[in-house]
Amino acid sequence: MNIKRACVIGWPVSHSRSPLIHGYWLGKYGILGSYDRHAVPPGEVKEFLASLGDQGYLGCNVTLPHKETVFDLVNIADEPTRRLGVVNTVFSRNGELWGTSTDGEGFLASVEAAVDGWTVGGRNIMLLGAGGAARAIAGTLVARGAAQVQVANRTLERAESLRNDFGKRITPLAWEAAPQALAELDLLINTTSLGMTGQPPLQIDLARLPGATVVADIVYVPLETAFLRSARERGNRTVGGLGMLLHQAVRGFELWFGTKPDVTPDLYEFIAESIEKGYRTT
Ligand code: ATR
Image (cartoon, rainbow, N blue to C red; front, side, top):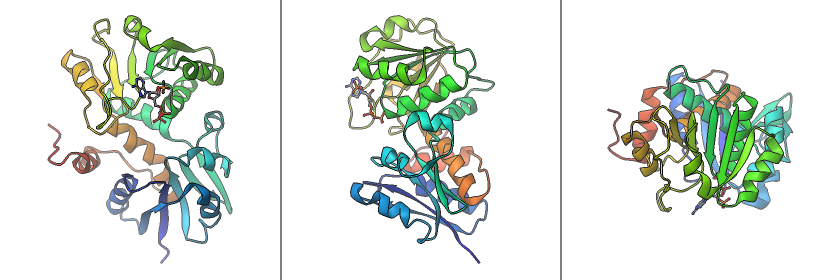
């Protein structure tokens, strides 16, 4: 019998939780398959991809720092990914390699799953940060009909370049101006690395934020950042970054292994436990 195989490539790659996630689903759905990790140095990405099929792989995930390199090496599967310029999921079709980015859709799915009935159409949204993660999320939010996406970033030019790439519904904002601009928001998202274990905390005055605004963080180590905790303590609905990590993996699994997997509380607990020992949902 044929074993279906996929992997993740990165440099380094040891921190990747993708093998745990895909391994969990392979077991749950009884699929004869494997999901490996490969540390691939920057100079060897092209060679690795060229030999992907010969190594028996149906595709791979791509993590830092290879997402842009791989974009240039494969066929791009969809227009949003073309605009984005990065690929995190590679799959083979008819002997060719194709790539897509699942981060933006993964983020959105995590919010939709966490907040009953939430839809992005017509929403006012603010992103804190304008790096790679912000680009993926902003592109999806605009494509899916958000009314306005304000992007507050320490380096204003990066927020402006998001407007150039994704259009007028993106409004660049100086980092310091963010607290004043919270009053009309439906969704506030931290896409910076601030608040991650080992990084400085994200400090922003939330006094003007409406109680009904959903607050999300893409950081998932720790599972609940101080930023999310302070939003939760003032009564806002919050969405942690682990949901995005789980939901962005769905598309790859479906492409390689042929089953669309569910993101369940059990999976959440399994991965959460690997991040913070002793973690339990309450
Ligand atoms: P990623 O691909 O994970 O988004 P990145 O491209 O390095 O990573 O982006 C990191 C984001 O965190 C950027 O928006 C960065 O702001 P700059 O564009 O000004 O660098 C933001 N960030 C990191 N450290 C920060 C800090 N101390 N204060 C404010 N923003 C910070």
